[in-house]
Image (tube, rainbow, N blue to C red; front, top):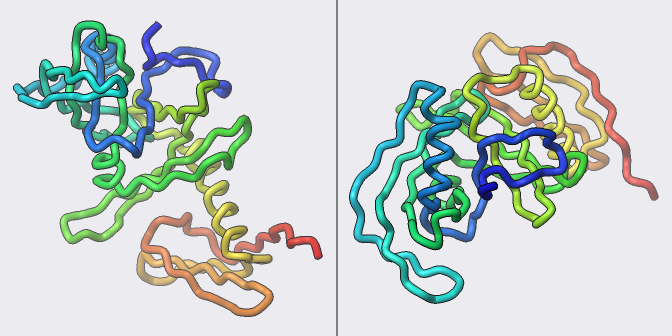
Amino acid sequence: STPLYSSAASDVYKRQRLIVDPGTSNGLAGCQTLHRHNNDNVKPSGRHIRVSQTKQIIIGMSGVPTKAVAHVELPCGVAGQVMDVHGDVVGGDAGLCPGLLCSPTLCKYRIGILSNCLPQGDGIAILHSENQYGEIVAVRFVRLLLTDSGHFLMPTDQWKENEREQKSLRDQVRYYFMRCLGANEVICKRKFRSTHHRMRVCTRTSVTDIVFDGVLEPVSYTHLTLPTNRE
């Protein structure tokens, strides 16, 4: 099987995915890997891969230069959002090279990663969507699957949003940041006339109001007690 189908402890069936690799400056995939991804994921969704010529030279871990056979724009379904991933394609002995999610793509979609915050060591990726004015209009959450080899895999076949999963991951992210901020209680979350939501964070030393632009659920007067640090 190709690396796109690497087993993950939280998975029980094969799914299309990319290896999250913030250390790479350019996306990369083997031609055979790309072919399978296209047939099993992209085509059934009614989309297509854009292919262009390139003169890019790839130098891998062995130090041997390899000429890329093409440059592609690969549509991926991530938490109900279409994410376009750019990368070079290599052939020959490197045809089974896994698809890599590179640093420029992570920066383009402002993807933040929380590691080892879910059972079995899985993580959470946070994706921001912006409008033409640079304002955040939506936030989506993706479960990153930890493999036996220690890589994080991002599923790329989620063309439709799973509301139940989004709510669960959102709660995990909220809990994670509340612990990081040293919060003991979240005592007041109110919906204002605008799309703004305000979360009041109470610590042992201060009270801080954090304003989110339309990304929290419109739930009024929510009380949540978080575990305190032991003395």
